[in-house]
Image 1: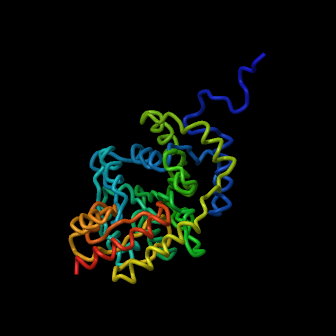
Image 2: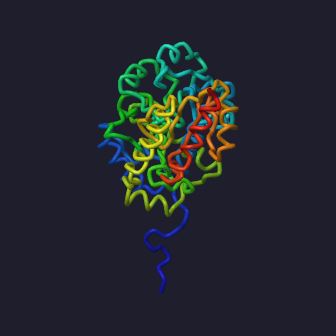
Image 3: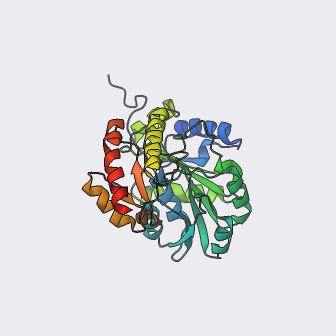
Length: 328
């Protein structure tokens, strides 16, 4: 006779996810952050994007403001506008670190959230612990920080990234395994609400309901089981680091301003001409595809990806050199 309820069977589950998976991840969060997380403060989501949309659906009224640090992941703008919010752009400093004076000046009574993305897409910058500590007193009720961290495991040269949850009291975490495991086509992640947030219980109830009504219903069942078993599974970051060093070193030798990213799998060099879109067109004639910085809110730059094969980067170098010579 076949059991009607075999272990790990597929059936309806709580919208927040399997309780035992949430509890396991909460224990790891508690170890990592020093905060008293329980499974009730973790909601399994359809990736970090699902987590962010769930939070924004839960906290925004029409016209409420969400700050985004520039350069930024372009889809943030759509997420915010999906839920009636208004995007407030705040420039980072010359090293792509949060500019605390600009953030403070941009806060209004309608500010509901600030989205942080560190390591950052597109710049690869890792926000410093000092920046996060100085940010903490600026984040007052009803404002929260949404820390979007899909690239956190992809850190170079032994750098230890700071924990926004530990340093910012009014913080929620949007996590995804799609980048760490190099499975970008799969969508599995979680939302963690800091136990220090006074309204944590109400926010978790709202986010659980939003998970259902946004059509996610619940995160993929099989992938919940997978990440509970191997939560720290990560691609060999040394492969990305070798390609980063190859590409940045070669670009610098040609005259490009190409700082080495601290994390993620992107490089964000300046374009040798102010019109980044025009320069991208020149690269296309060399068989090189890049994304103009204007698409991330910072013209005069371009985003290059390290996810391609090393020999493809090597073959591209002559084209990069011809393009910069033509721009001189």
